[in-house]
Image (cartoon, rainbow, N blue to C red; front, top):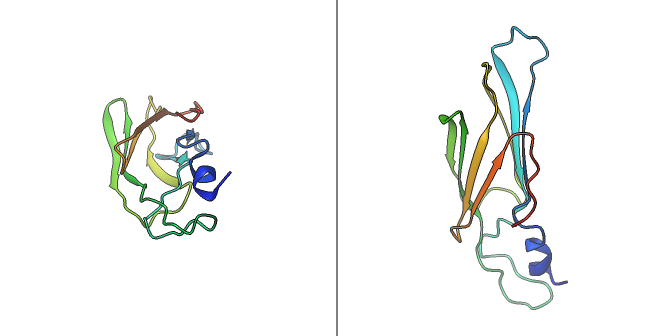
Length: 120
């Protein structure tokens, strides 16, 4: 398997977790979103072929809870391979999260908290 093939093996495998606070009266809860994605910026060289890997990176992420926006991020080529986003948000009766991530190839990745989503 070449470097480029390795980068896209399991592309889009993702997980969203929302963690219960240590104390029930806490106003905030922690969460994380992880996605397997190479986030190539177009300047990396494939060591086997000598050519450049095409740019492909997560360009936006939107996290919602019950259709209310938790946060939206416009990202770019500087985020890491297989990024892991950690954040806090207000604790409420309903805390399930939904995430939509879109990459530079316009591939849309969706996930909900507590459910591992396999690669597309």
